[in-house]
Image (tube, rainbow, N blue to C red; front, side):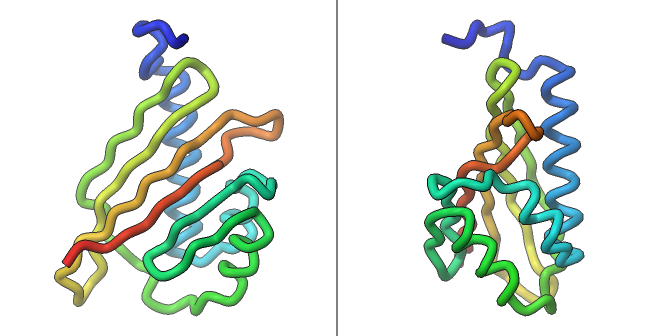
Length: 128
């Protein structure tokens, strides 16, 4: 059980925010190698996208490689990162894309693995 004093420890929060920032930069820049690196390489990893359900690292990787690189820029309008202990975090954002009235939402569960912080579960959705 995580002690309340272990929630949002400044050192862990800084690490997760740095990993999340790297993810966001790689996403809008279509840096597929970095995106692949930041997902846990496991068949247990999942990503529910705005139009796809991806089960396992290989499916996520194949989606990223096939996805068009245009129209990825977005503006983050709300962000909340919460860490639990030294090894787990959730990151949630709202975003907007230029030319769209829709609000996007993204949630990620991050876990510290031996190789560093990795996304183990992600969900992206759009509101009308």
